[in-house]
Length: 123
Image (cartoon, rainbow, N blue to C red; front, side, top):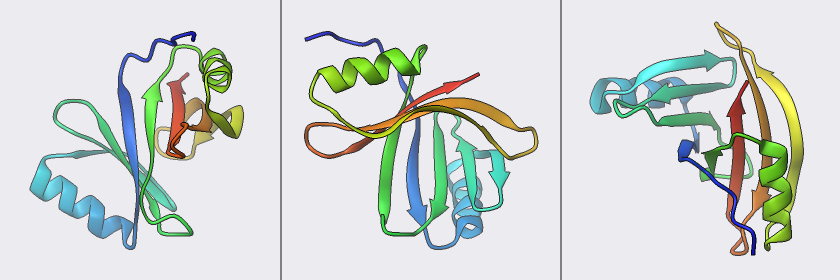
C-alpha cells in the first residue's frame, strides 16, 4: 500500500444555519480571525493557524469534511483511489471569490468508512 505525505490538516468544514452568527461566535469566543468571507461561505483562522470553513446547511449537516494540505493534489487523489478510497470529485482548480481571491486546487474522496476528505492546495 502506497503512503502519500499529508503535512497536516488545512481546514474542517462545518455546515451551519447562520454563517455570520457562527463567524461572530468563533471570532469573539474562540479567538479565530476571518481569513476569507464570500457570499455563501467563510474561512476562519485559529490562533494556531488551522482553519474552519463554514457553508450553509444543505443535504449534509454538521461536519462536512476534513481538508488535508497536499503538495500534489492529483497524485494524492490517485494514490488514495488505489488504496481503498472512492472518488467524490476529481481534481480541479478554482478561485474562492473573496477579497483577496484565493486560487486553489482541490479534490474529494471518501475514505473506506465513507468519511469525506478534501485534498487542498493553495496555488
